[in-house]
Length: 229
Image (cartoon, rainbow, N blue to C red; front, side, top):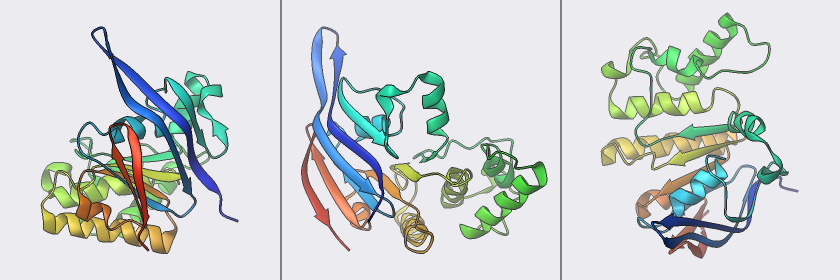
């Protein structure tokens, strides 16, 4: 039986734009199982980024529930939510690397695995960078790396703490199409060969087509789910 990693139940989020309520999410129900690769696709304003923020425990819903690994996030305090975020591998569109650190230092930085000493952190960082194809670039700073290489570093960093799942926000949005294809090949490999559960937010239909499952959003609702593989 598959394990449910992420589940949302009747998820609603309303923002106030001045005195006008804006319904960003209108009762979203989503389930992501261990080993899934799900693309959440939609145009700007569809609610996909709001959904990502709620799944990533970066925001709280107006109504409904987000459940991660069986834990209802509404039952957690701020410190517990901060700890939970460490179990999520975030990958952002603009990389968010530390400019003064080399690739290895960027990957080492978030490591919070209990009992992991400095030499072990370094070895793990080197292994992760090798896994994403940067064995020969690990001593270079972000300024010395291409956009695709920076995103590979960001993916290696996201995997540093053995996360429950990767949460990717437009991971190909800031790189050219050839490099985007290479990044997607890497993500597919991590999912298929390493079993890395992945949730990817994108507005790009072609990129979404690389996932095992496509969830289409419009006006704060899921309008279609398509199994692709």
